[in-house]
Length: 308
Image (cartoon, rainbow, N blue to C red):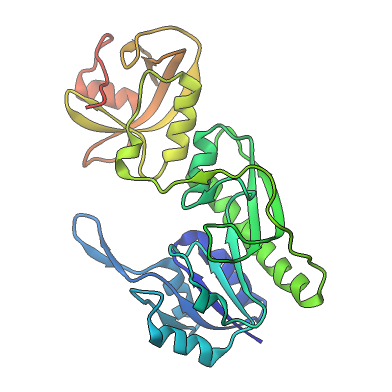
């Protein structure tokens, strides 16, 4: 029986790869259109497209999901499953009705917590200690379908959204394969989502601005959750500065004020505690350690980071 795979970013690649490695018949990969990115506006292909083409899988990149040509192609394939992993758009009922056994979604949270587009980032920002992956049968809602399987993992102190995403993508790929096998054998009974739901709204670049009046632990979580995009940022003398690697420490100070400069870190006041900054990135430049930043900007104790 055949599978159609919907997915776009790196997070989706392990799930596609595990299907290929286990000889599942993936006949079509549906992914977002190519985009121009960076200062050079170079065209970049979605990671799912790259992997699919390497394995001679047909790829389509529709602008709109209700395109009749796409629906006709899906009906021609008449797949056993449609698998959706971080595709980026909601599937409508005409698409959901096509596969014989339904549409399986791999979602990076323990549903019903963190429905939506940015579950990994918001779990870290909110200081969660545990997260995971859910496979579910899709309906037209935003991650509201019946749960099939779940697997949890700890959020480590050193995790950023980048490292946690990489780990969850692998967990998700294993869970996807198990889900397909268990559905075929009839050993899974889908269950309705119960308990309080929460939503992980999509992040914008402007969401990365640091509010120095928050406490140091919250800002530690914020910086980790925002990395690598949109990245936490602040301003120094009206210049845009990304804050990449930090640690909360004990102490008191005025929010946003550089209270102490040490050999390998800058200690900044917050609403409660100090935030130790180890790595920063000035606009248009590479990340730099705090000592090099202090020397390059002639930073002094008493200088201030601002929100604008």
